[in-house]
Amino acid sequence: MKPILLLGANFLRTQLVLIAIVLAYMICLTGFLAFHEQLPDLVFFVRQQAVYAVALGAMVMVTAIQNDRKSRRILSVLSKGIHRWQYIGGLLCGAVMIAGIFCLAVGLSALWLAQQAGMPLAGLAELLLVLFLASAAGASVALFCSIVLHPLLALAATGLILFFPYFAQIRGWNPPGDLFPVAAAMHTVVNFGFHKADDNMWRIGAGAVIQTLVFWMAASMAFARRDVTVANE
Image 1: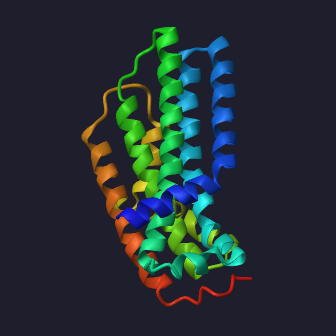
Image 2: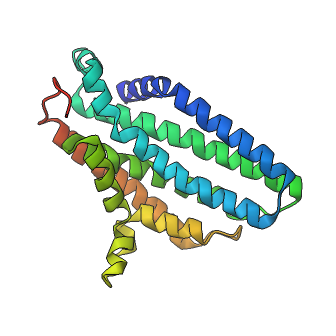
């Protein structure tokens, strides 16, 4: 576990510029809303940032291995006795840390805005926890896709896997929501209105954890058979 955490922290350091930009965006948006605050604005703020949280984890993860291959950093890491599954776990851990920072920033901003205006906070903590777990699940899917596909194709495949229920509904299909926790989390976010969390939210969180572990293992097995000396072109 220690190598994974160290690799995750190192990946986090490589994304400090992105984190700074995201935090600056949150501060500016929070300041703007503080002068034009109403309950519908706060609800829209939480819903909008929830979508960004899932997208952020996937976007960061889909190019991580490609960048390490181009810079040859991946060879130096694996030459130090790090197992491939640990390397994959470290990348995922770093993406989860980034998602956690963003979700925490959203939570603190929403908390401050709600307290300033005397608005309710019911269900916010539960929503952010489920959102964080969904972000981790989205990052794990992006990681797996980035191993077997070019980053551009991996991004498209990630979106298709995560939001397959929406595409399926066009054809009249209704796949089980428990198999697609990210899409279920987004559905919960869209209907969020600062009310008490229901039991379904905890099912979504549990499904997100399971999906994260499954795709981490799948990514580890796929990466064990990949040539890491060249980057995908």
